[in-house]
Every structure is written in C-alpha cells, then in structure tokens.
Amino acid sequence: MFLICTGTGIAPFRSMLNYLSLHGVTHKNFYLIFGCRTKQDLLYYEEMKELEKKLENFYYLPTLSREKWDGYTGYVHTIYEEICQKNNEGIETPEELKPASFYLCGWKAMIDDARKKIAALGYDRKSIHLELYG
Image: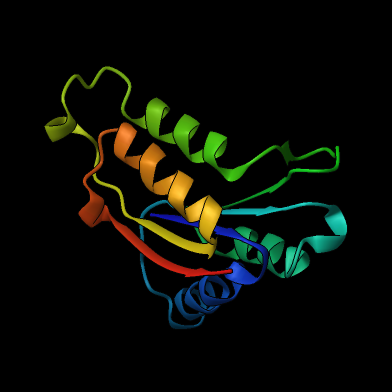
C-alpha cells in the first residue's frame, strides 16, 4: 500500500494510520511518501516517526524538494518507483506484478505525474485511488 501525498494531503493518511494503530488492524507494508519543500513544511513529522516505531511494516518516507537534509530529497515519484522496481525485480509481465494499491492526495500536478508513472510501472489504473486539490 502506497500513501503518496504532498502538503496538507497528508491529513487523510494520518487518519488512516491512526485508525490502524488504535484498532490493531493487521496489514502488510504501508509506505507513507510525503513530499514538501522544506523541513519547516513537514506536517506531523514527530507523530509519523512515532507511528513508524509502533506500527509493524509501516514506513514513513518524507522527501524535501527545496532543502537538503539527512532524508530523501527530490520528488515523491522517485521513491515509490524505486520500491516498486525492487519489489518486482525479475518479473517480466504486468500480470505478474506484486499487488499494490496507490492512494494519492495532493497537488494536481503531482497526481497527474503519479498516475502516468504508476501506469508506466505496469499497474492498472484501478489500483490508483485519488483525491486532489489545487
């Protein structure tokens, strides 16, 4: 499960992750990939780091597009593309891809790019769910 967001698009995913934590819902790998410009823009950073410690198989992957730091830099796309390619190494046809769902929330430009890039990875558009703004 990929939760991919920019800016305040993290809000619905925060709710989903807190629900998982509060109710002990079992799950496979969840990747929260959150893009913003600077460290100052990292909404809920400490809360997500704590959830990452509490929730098994949850990975919080923030990335900054306009500031260097010790985490990821650049845009969100590079991160999920790398994870998907690694997970699907050796798979030759789209029918063999490891199942994944992509939830997108954020700026229209990010969502438009993500839809194209996810399709280019071989995933069907039915695996993409979105909410956009701006």
